[in-house]
Every structure is written in C-alpha cells, then in structure tokens.
Length: 236
Image (cartoon, rainbow, N blue to C red; front, side):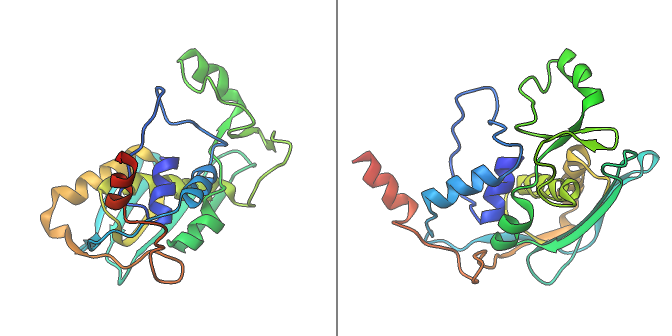
C-alpha cells in the first residue's frame, strides 16, 4: 500500500511494477523513498484523457462492535480525506487529520509518515511468520508510552498521517482517481476494501468523469517522451 500510495499521491496512473521477491520492499516504512524514485525517473504525460470515479451518493461500511467506520460521500472535486484513530497507548491516543489530496500535499504531509507497531506484539507476529524484517529502521515501534526510535517521530501526529497514507493506497485499488470525500474512524485495510466493494456493488453510487490534472501547479508534469515513445526507444 505504500508503493500504491506513492503512485496515487504523485499522480502516476499507468506504470508497470516488477518485483523480484515475495513482496514490495518495506524501505523505511513510509512512501517517501518511492516518491523520491518517482521524481528521479520523471513522469510522462500520455495522449489520452484521465478518467476518475465520481462518488454520486454516500456509501458507508462499519464494524460497530469495534468502533470502526469508513465512508465515501460526494464532493465537488478531487479526493479529500478525514481520518481519526484511537489507541489505548498514551504514545498515540486519539489523533485526527483532514486534508485535500494533491501531489504537493502528499509529499509534504503524508509521504514520510511511517508504519508503526507495538513492541509487545513483535514476538507474536514473528511466531506467525510476519514482520520478520521489521526493525527500528523501517517502523515506528511503541512500548507503552514511549516511542523507541532514536529520532522520535517525523510528525507530531505521524500515526494518523500514516493511516491516511495507507488509505490513499487502499483507495487506489479502485482503478482510477476518486472524486469524493473519504471519512474514516479507526479504519484499516480490510474495512477500506469493504468500502470499495460496497461502492462498486451499487451502480447508482458512482460514475465516470474526467479527472482534473494532479500536478501541484494544476498540470501533470511532462518529463521526456510519452510512454509509448519511450518504450519504442528502449526496444530499439
């Protein structure tokens, strides 16, 4: 989801990702390394209009027993996100943040937010064969009311920012940019997936529309040749 978030956040909607291992590398636990590499490679504007998924009526899913909820509602333009989280540990507590998504905002406010976990859960995860490569180099680790990473947090509310980053990646699985407003309360990957399933299960809840350019100055950056031209040049 970090790579998907980086692609969606920078406005890349046509790319091939090749992975020579069992999963995408965790990098530093954020989307920032992927954003850096995307910027280094550059982007190419293609000679085709971008389409977006417009939310035409509210759609919501929830897990009431767990206090979780996720919803998409109509909006005039672009994607905005309003996310709140709540954890018992004092190191996180209750955090909330809302923003309108564009490449500049994604890079500045979300990309560097790292995934996080709890020291008490490490042994359990590793016994299940998970998080085997996890370390303080690629996650924020919490022990009670303490953040164990030497450098501390990158943002005062890094935890909710990372949840928003995850959501951007999850929503990119819709297959096109979304024009609407997302609200999430203690949401996660599974609930976000249920939300997209509920959206597409109701043909009246969405429709295709033209997507506005995603560049920070209102235009999609065009660097180098278009992708078909580049592919021909590489094959030659």
